[in-house]
Image (cartoon, helix red, strand yellow):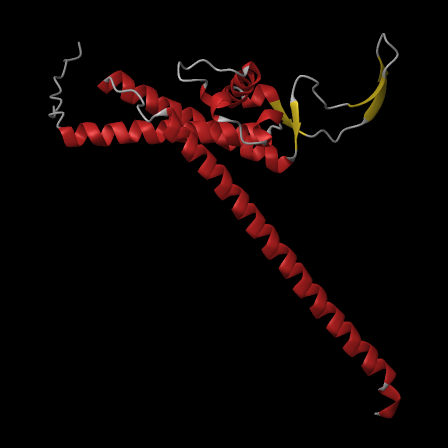
Length: 211
């Protein structure tokens, strides 16, 4: 017979400082979850997330009523992909190709390893969606844990969340433009370097008989 052991669990006082800290954590996690859904939606080519939605599209009016049902469907689609990435996305197929024709006479080309029920992504896009989905699951687990154990819920206002969302989208756009600019600059630099070497080679060949 096994002997039961008694474990003394330390308790703590929910001071204003601790409560403030926990509230900030759940607000931060909630915003992170929104951003993770946006990332998944973008890489999974869920079209409505390609442009920044309006405040009403994201959060509805002052009564919380969303005026754009399409936006709600897009958020639901992103959440669905986040919760079941293996079932809903796949790397673009590369198998053998065969032709099909439906009852209406529409012809199509299909890869042998293509699943019509999955979103076709590049290898990089698939990696981003899969890894972000894992982080989203962890984020939502943490949010649920904080709520279950401490009874707190996100209180960041809808206005603040929208402002953070827009600022984050603009920051990502600037970063992408800066990276593209650096890439183009490096490409131009390499091209000039190669052209310079080519000219030196041509001069050397043209004057070889003088040596």
